Amino acid sequence: MSQRSKLKLPREHGAWAMLYVPFALGVAVAGRISWAVLLLLVSTSALFISRESLLIWRRGRARRREVKGAARLLVIYLALAAIFGLPLIFWHRLFWLAPLGAAGLGLLLFNGELATRLEDRSITSEVLAICGLTLTAPAAYYVAGEQWDRITFLLWVLSALYFASSVFYIKLRIYSLNPRKREDHLRVRWDCAFYHSFLLVALIFLFLSGNLRLFALAAFVPILARAFWRLIKPATHVNLTRAGILEIAYSCAFLIFSALSFYGA
Image (cartoon, rainbow, N blue to C red; front, side):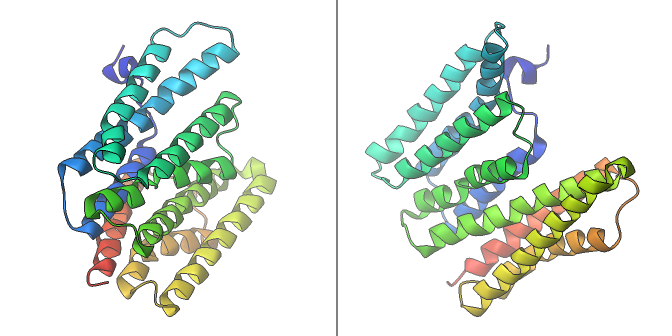
């Protein structure tokens, strides 16, 4: 058994990016790193990792099977999240972390319940999971900068909008490769077209209202271009290695350009 299996680490590589890229964005915009930020990093990581143990434990109970070590690891990870997270609230007096943590934990439990019923792959479920993961952006900004302002909320909105794009795009790529599911393919195409059109309009509105700068718009150009291109010209095959490298590049572009857009704000 591998170390990943022993420690019950999440297998979704994209989810790690959805957790840490917004975290890095929050710290970059705040412009400082402290011990409190490191405490938050460990706490959020432990909470995120606990999802896999929760999922395995819940599925085991639903099927009336004993899953060795899952319950123990779940308790350990949640305890680590509390040990490193609670001092931020009670010692550093960062009280706004309490509702953020409660929201993240609530979405974790809700997503775990859907996963137990094998309903966690719907668009609604995946978007809600992304909303929970990207809470690391406002949390990191708040802890690093020790301030709660409009930027806190805006960082979360931008991160959630960016990563939600992947839900629609990936489903579009998957269904476009399966000609036998034509009806599902058409539905997914409409979903993808609607979301990215909404995203484009929302970004333009935020820019015209003075809430976003051009750098922030540039951060979304790659994912908007890829989505509309695949809507016009569906792919006939997928190179997973190339797709993975591109996703990393897009996330780095989002992180850099989004951070630059807040300098001097």
